[in-house]
Image 1 (cartoon, rainbow over the protein chains, first blue to last red):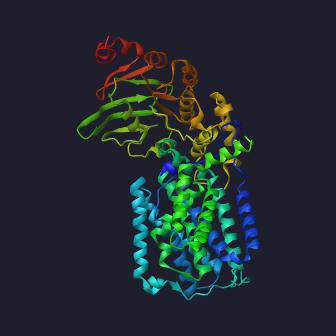
Image 2 (spheres, each protein chain N blue to C red):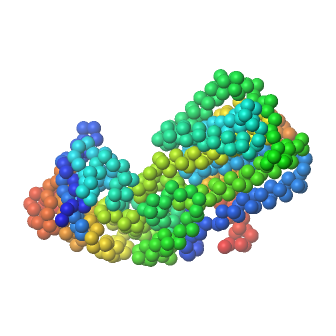
Image 3 (tube, chains in turn yellow, orange):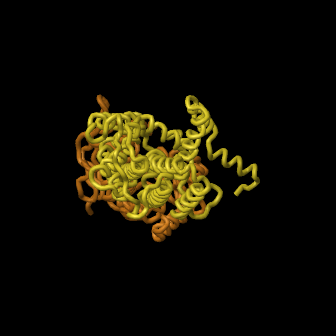
Length: 332
Length: 246
């Protein structure tokens, strides 16, 4: 897994010998918020697509914490997303329709599942870990299929109507509130993720990704740190799941599927793992591509994604970027 | 004076292979103990047992008078032990200063903190820069570790161990693979180790061993063959037969 996740050096600048510094944590979320709002204003008839991009971006961001930052292999990330989605859906149906409370429930459910499964999963590495993450998500999927009374089984969980956001903004038919709501949650959680990654904890987790033996020799409780990170990632994936449930007003079995786990991994690789913003780029490119290519040819759109993936793997984005900068004569 | 590190009959087997056999010795403040022996004598295995990477099959290891035989590697580090690796073991993509900060944040027990930026701990950053200055690496603070010369990476190995402010430090072949001409900075670093630190060093360069150590333990086939001052060990006929060969 390490071969496909080239970690950006935290603050490393090869030519510049002065002390390394992180960019301010608010910068990326602010840019995302502004770009998102501009995109929504410019394309008011594509708000559904925008909402999907924002939610997917949040989900891929969560995966980036696990794969790109901590260097763990997983193909079962949909378990955490689906858990958040079902928790938020069931909560809205049976307890309370308030979206923010439902979001908190989704976050808690995702974090809870990550904490529970992580305590066992994170003792393993590499392929063993990869297989076990698939196993966990498949177990959850079959549990969801069996518990028809709660999840609606293969028919999906529906019939819940969300209340207004903050008690004021009703989900409208055009999807304006849904888009802004999803965008706001994405920006806030991106800010949180940025802070966590640049904190001493985040530094230690990156250190574990780079060299486990080194961190153990420095006295780092490696398993405990990875477990905390996985729990945080679970919270973010749970939030994405909850947003998906609330804005679609339906939760399907596909939110727990292996295909979804694999798809978000493809998005992360497309955008570049380990720097958080890559997750957002990958999610956007993939979702837009899916949307446009599928509307041109619903059967062969995966061909385009496959070709793009090959291109990204063969020509690393970092190298392409350096090449472009040299061409522009702007070597810094 | 009580021992900082004490080994009592430490044993390790890998299947049928008996790698360390009843090894006992003690290390006091200010000791410079060189652990020597032919290849395969069990030196690195012993260091791995002391540092907690490998569990002991039997025997006892005490650190500052406390039994640490069953403690994890992390717990032993917190109790005052640090080590370096024979094969450079660093975070290759980290800026050099960040690398040192890893050790400092860990030492201060801060790596559970999830919100404040690493850059918002100016005291630790200043300390990291001070350590880099001491090792002549200040100009490389922002350089990715993998871009440094090999000898400089070996220096970082040592800087990380010292950044933890240990009482006992285990140096596993600090000079391994460093070209002769580049060794002087490492030698200077060895000479400037804190006086009251207890140092155990594994080294194949005999000139360095006899220059640096005030005590030598010779390991052969996993057991202690000789333990004494450099002069006594040099004169010991068994050591000459088993190791020096002439």
